[in-house]
Length: 467
Image (cartoon, rainbow, N blue to C red; front, side, top):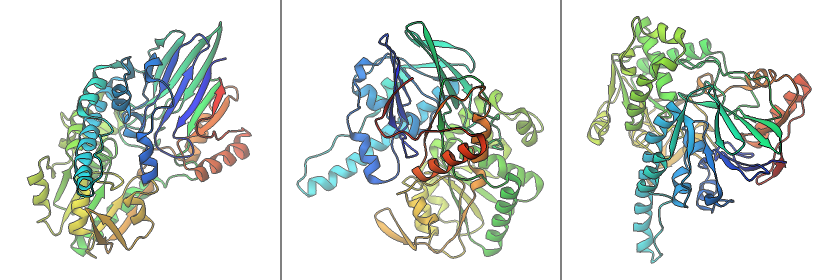
């Protein structure tokens, strides 16, 4: 029998990684994601791969987010020279994200080594380099949706639209094993059915084994219309209070959603602020990629924001100001009121949002809007959980701002959407829950049993099963 090894995103949200091995000798790595969040989890990124990279025939990536693709340069640095398969749009976004991640690795290591030198400790090497990222990008093999391709002997892959971010995919693998075909479906990150621009996730009806994400396995998201009304009220209140609005946002996906919503508010006369700053070089470059792939957008959402086809995402929001350079970014901090500032990183682990927190988080008239998931161990999670201070830029900053969490903006499916998606399979496949904190998995496991009478397993890290 073919074998499946659970190597990452097991009882945690990040670090997606699974190994498929056929009895005929094919080895395919599904995902190569970076762990994010707690320090001990991130340190796991430096551990050797639990397989020989040189033995792999192919790598398959569901989408470009770093927790799904972020260790590809490390894999290449360890000697892997085979193909990396992903959708066309994911391949474009990976160039943006992997090069940025490599630069962060190099800069963080350079900073750390300055401290280590003063303490007489030996220097560290970066997790990977820009050269490694460049090599990984040379190995990309872009694919269209719904087009089967043999990625290794006896292993066929088909990508289906997951509706999560641009290019995101549900991965269907058919493994031929001694004249027996087994069908494995990995949900990837399933999109929220009310996410703007993205299509509703594709439903499939056949599988022998399903890996189902469970990021929000314990609850449903708030109604999107109610969430938009709440955001509009937050912006009105911030305008009355006289402070700025800070929005930590992921550069790929969440930022484009926010521009879409703020563009709608602007057209409807519901946006009191006079300036929206997009202070994220990565998000600005991601906008350009989204603009090139507008043919993948949901046509109804696209029509709602643009009377005629927009050449650029930025055209949806005329008061949007992009600030790619450090000088332009620093100039924003002279604006003490009346601005919306969208900046990375989404979980406040670094990036330009840290500098805006330094200038605004201690101000009672400031409003901070969290539109996405905050992993345990991140500064964003600490703020959401009510921390009175947070450490950023090597100093403690008081949290006096008004904090808002908008779960309805999540790009992940909620519990009912997960149940609906998996219920489309004709026969009850073997079901394994991945990509979720343990209590979220257990809640989804119980809901599957009560509502669908399905048994779902929660694998252990490193567990291996027969497909």
